[in-house]
Image (cartoon, rainbow, N blue to C red; front, side, top):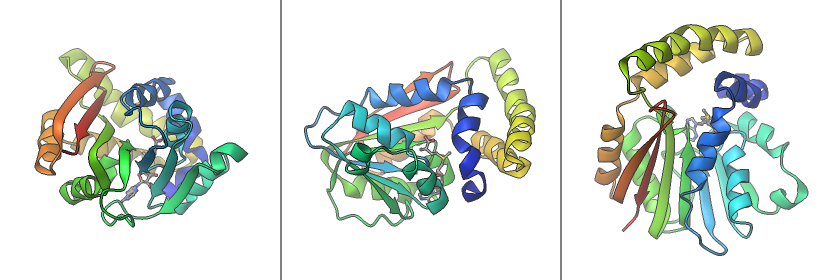
Length: 222
Ligand SMILES: C[S@@+](CC[C@H](N)C(=O)[O-])C[C@H]1O[C@@H](n2cnc3c(N)ncnc32)[C@H](O)[C@@H]1O
């Protein structure tokens, strides 16, 4: 499905979130550990906006932009300049079976991706496995919104506006109906925090962004 919409993905992200997706990713990147020559895993990297953001914050980092969908990675590769191409490496792989040795990365990011990987607990266990001790996991994912009125509006937006606009621009209404369904089916932030702890992460915290439309989760491998 992501392969079908890869060419429209960035534009629709920015339009449908009214540009807020850029702010949300920046907020996640604020939590990157300040490590020189860091090795960073960007899982579900898609078109690599997070990978590029990591490199801006940590110019000496090497980033494994990992995604199961090669068309999304190809779209991302097309955006990289020559310097970024020496630091960001596309890896086509499943988050449930990462092709990296244990204790490899200083940080791992996953933005709007954990929702798509099923089942979640083994994916979180894989992230814990490939992070080095003290390595930090940053997860950005849609939430359910907090206040009743705002939640109602958000649901109308998800179920009506998103498939309509997404369908018109990409020609693939089904993909945007799927997006709404996966957002609504995703568990509350406390459940994900619990799953992160069960996968072995410590110092787990979560922070609502834009009144809980998005949740940022942080955990550290002991
Ligand atoms: C909504 S996009 C997010 C892309 C990017 N992180 C961003 O912030 O825009 C979700 C991505 O998850 C990827 N994905 C889905 N299932 C996956 C899996 N099992 N392993 C790795 N990536 C997966 C999809 O191919 C897609 O590129």
